[in-house]
Length: 400
Image (cartoon, rainbow, N blue to C red; front, side):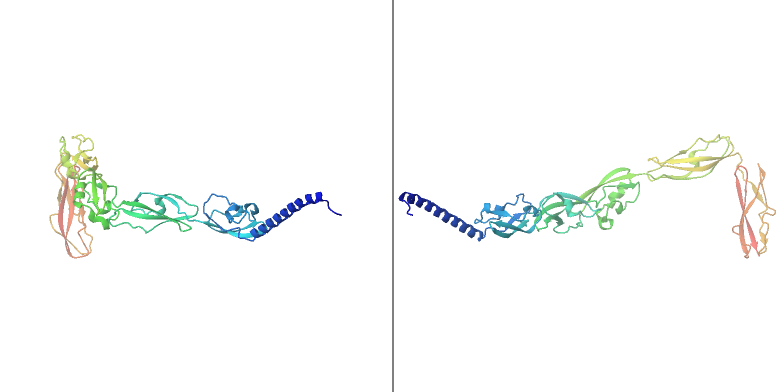
């Protein structure tokens, strides 16, 4: 059947449009296939600590089409908190591609350092971390000295370098000035008149004793109160406050006193010696004296006090009596001869009499007599009256 001219004229444009559409579709499909066959993805490198979220466009080359690209691997499963390499599968149209996500750490730690630090030599040197006040980094860090410091012999200040290094080897350096104290003690106490010793002032007396002025210290030790000395090394100096105190009581020696009734003794009658490092102490009676007519023996306490209030007390005996004469011992004038190994009565024929008390007991000291050996020995006889007057006599004993 023949097509009319009018219908043929309408069919030609339709065929032309259809042909164009088919050609466009074929072209698009050809382009798509070509694109899918090209390198549309690349590996991605990001800095550790980056806050950016993973986007598919970050992996696309200029040939890639974001509308046709997507993640196969869930990006939420990728750990961005540490440096390293991770594999992801991406899709572009029909193409699947494995790419690498590389997290790198090229940023050194942010750190703040102490400008200076004081070290007491009694303690050990501080760890390097003690000189760092602030550290910020997205990985673990270690802190150490560039060169291990040592305490100088003259305790001079030194500058140390501290390094803060992260796990990727990025480093931040800082400097700190170290001062050294404690080699000279800040304070010490000396007893008045005490000989100063280096260990009272120095932490290392064997090494540093020559730093001290011994003449100055000797002079200070003789003066009560507080004194400040300055000690210098070749590089630095330090001060020590010395407190000189007096806690030592006076030395006091006393003797017994025999006094006539009605006579009041002086404190000096009882004192043999009274001395103190601070000067002559004040000596006095520690209590009231007894009635001067109260005959008999009385205990008297003598007190010596120095300028610092230190007190020494000693007891002595006061005898108040009108009887000043000791008993007379008779019967010991002649030498006595005894046999070796015998037990003689050395008091036989020996008596003692007092002009006031009458007969008194006699004792004999035989500590110097050896009856087991022949020889000439001395024994001592003693007798005391009620007023405390004592008589002693010697007698020769010959052992044959």
